[in-house]
Image (cartoon, rainbow, N blue to C red; front, top):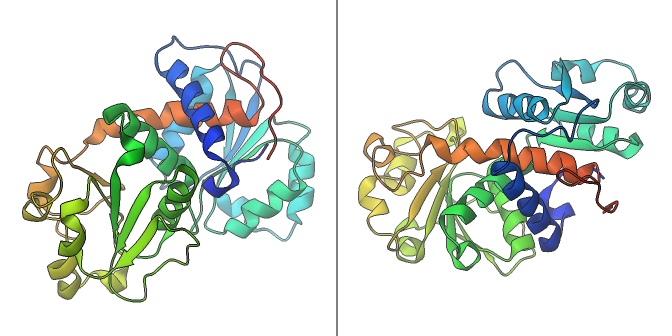
Length: 292
């Protein structure tokens, strides 16, 4: 089974991945990946995602061979690349800007292919965020999520997650940043103050250059004052890397609204769970083969 986007899953499958992550989170290091080899394609600039994939694989007894994503930009057909890799590896993890390349490799692959991020989506990151929010708020599926920012890979993945898990998602930004979504749970608006009183979770993403303007900051920058207008016990989850003075202010990052750096600690367990799930393997024992 491959994991390319959240919309490939149903809610039952997401919860099964979360169940595996729960076990991994509270158990000692295991050997579920003992004797397994992963081929990873990661840029040098990747920090959190690469660390957690490499450490997560090692903690389960596996080993990683890492290449830069530019390796996939050569003239060789991707079907041939994966055809050879299958001889030596048990699964592949790819972070590449071009989702089409990841999908093409998966199309021809007989081993699991996991999308670690593209310019279109970031499925592991968002599933991990939801898992962490679930740990903080047992009513996480009944909350109102408000994403403030442009139409990018993070917002698109949140839209997919909202549809699969039936989460209520507001998207707030200037006109032209709407996301086409066949989903009643997704709502786009251009006035932030209008949705703050109903918001439980505020989400942001680094701003593209065209949105880094004073006009945007005045309308949409998340400040402490704006967070104080949200619902009781609300949380701020800015997608890293975040930039103080742009999508968020210094004072709000220093407040209790910010979920904190430790919020991302669960990324390692969710990614481990995704690997085991895609491999048809549970924690400490084999489980039935799962396909999409």
